[in-house]
Image 1 (spheres, rainbow, N blue to C red):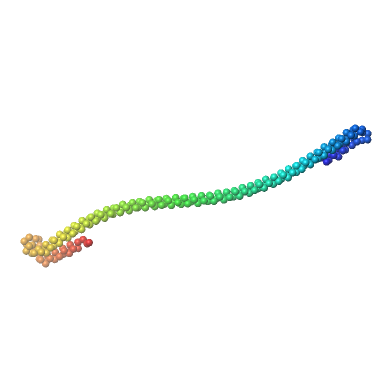
Image 2: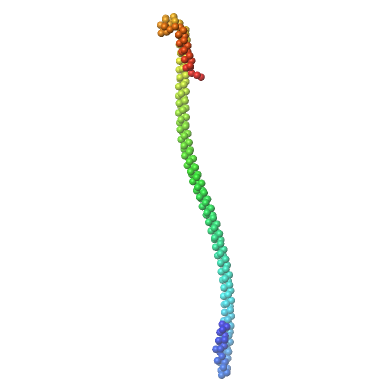
Length: 207
């Protein structure tokens, strides 16, 4: 706008010539004054606009800097959060893997323990069956032994009675009773009796 003032003054010079009339001169001066005032208003407005633009630009730059700083801070925080989240996720993944391995190990141990318990239960059942069978067999053997012992004692007593009878059985009694030992001497008969007595003693049940 400062460049417009000389141009306007040059344009008004022909109107200021000495031959011009006073009224035209007055109108020219009025026009020049009005133009000058308008020019000053325009310059003032322009300065105001420039100042506003400068202030707006400065404010914009400040806001841009602030926003840039905030964005940088947000990016920084986001990166830190992402790093923390990645570490947490990695830790959780490792924990999950460890727990999965532990569960697998416990499952294997449980399976082995269950199999061992089933084997032990089957073995216990077999042992119990065998024990019951042996107990029954022992009872049978005890009854049989008792029966055999009673029979042996009875036979031993009977044998002793027979031997006692033959010890006192004389030759004359043998002849009178027509026993089969008629042709045997008394000494031989006593030897036979003693031999049978020894054999019966050997066969007697031991306590």
